[in-house]
Amino acid sequence: MLKELAVSADQMLAFETDCHIFDGCGFPAPGLHSFIFKPMFTIGGFEFNKPILLALVGTVLIVGFFWAAFNKPKLVPGKLQMVGEAGYDFVRRGVVYETLGKRDGEKYVPFVVALFFFVWVMNLWSVIPLAQFPVTSIFAFPLGLALVVYVIWVGLTFKKHGFVGAFKNFTGYDKSLGAVLPLVMVIELFSNLLVRPFTHAVRLFANMFAGHMLLVMFSIASWYLLNGIGIAYAVVSFGMTVLMVAFELFIQAVQAYVFVLLTCTYLQGALAEHH
Image 1 (cartoon, helix red, strand yellow):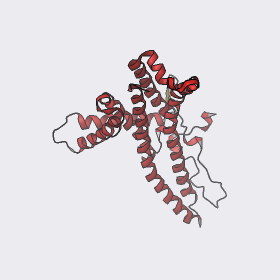
Image 2: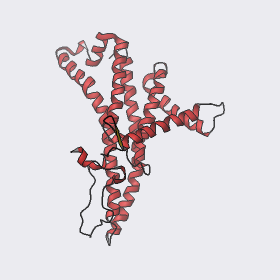
Image 3: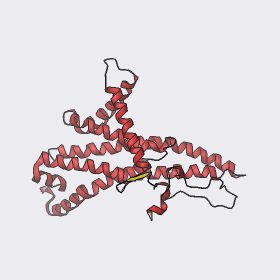
């Protein structure tokens, strides 16, 4: 079924270019075919497609940018180093220090900075010409990132508190709850170890999925309405496309921020002495 829906990278919008309103053809609404791509090539059963290419290119760009910015740091920074320092310092002070504190959080700064910029760039592909697709709208990507955070968080909890302490941490153990303690422990255990990584991933995925659908919808509508009196509506639709792009730029940055903020919150919970 998925292979039937798959489209090539140059068919992402997947509609007839000569199809307009009043021409007797219906509106070619976007659907799941806008998120599924035919593989560019296959190696040993592994399919390499457009989202994977964008993820790899984005990774190279991020690593290349920070390497260029900090490879030969200067006391009086140049423009590239200033931008790199501003981005690094924003995550360090605005996210890590605010949740973990300077003493506990310093060792996690590189990880959180890398996570923030990776998520942001994967989101940003949505509005980049030729790319025009947010990698994080494919659930496997945010889920993979959430699982990395999950493994670090769980491992850190056991390392910090031992088995018994970690169990109490995950279950919200509190003797003062009395008779409802067993119920609370079951709910907390289910919420922390099963629901938390899923919701961490879904929050990012759902926002990027919905944003991309809206952008594709208004883009197709702008072209579809370019006929007769429909041109007036096409102008409105195009205006909405521009507004949606601007709004999406804001949402992309916010979602990257929220993702790493939640990551730091989980780490803070693992490091905390009392729960």
